[in-house]
Length: 112
Length: 115
Image 1 (cartoon, chains in turn purple, green):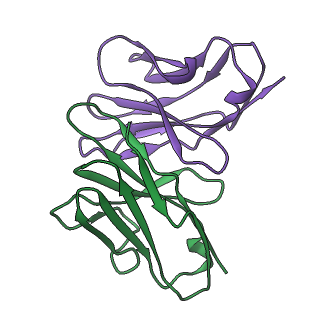
Image 2 (cartoon, rainbow over the protein chains, first blue to last red; image 1 turned 180 degrees about the vertical axis):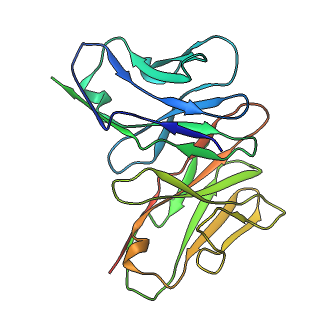
């Protein structure tokens, strides 16, 4: 079975500071990993994915994620956070049948 | 990306009744999924609804409670039957365009409150 873990319920950063949201995964085969963001009262928005290739993947809104196979991690990063980045972030892993398993989510608060 | 709409966006229903949620996609897709997000929780897959086959349900979800239709490649419905307050959740549909793009897109969700 596959799963992801987001060890932090909340992340608080000041605007302009780097933002990191942590995710670790467990899969039996090749990992297909994703990050989604959910703003209040809105659906999930796709941020980025890792399928294969470069370990550093770039996505929407200036976000990037680093895939680390030895640490089984896929941390989401943004060099300079904005207040508008405050939202709920989900890490997910996909199986061979295209089913997504989500982490518990991390609430990011960026203070001005 | 894909443009996905859901109806209704929210509803308040009485215990024992049923609600049918519609999901419409702007283009043809083979793979469609239904998820549930309970208050303050993560997303849980209810079922996979691929056109041309019966929906396949995840552990803990049954067809009698959550019947699904998939009449064509752009549309699906999920019915929440004989509702109880425990069914109060956000229900989201999602699609995977396939073709090696490996991207799954979500509708805006239907916020259901059962009283």
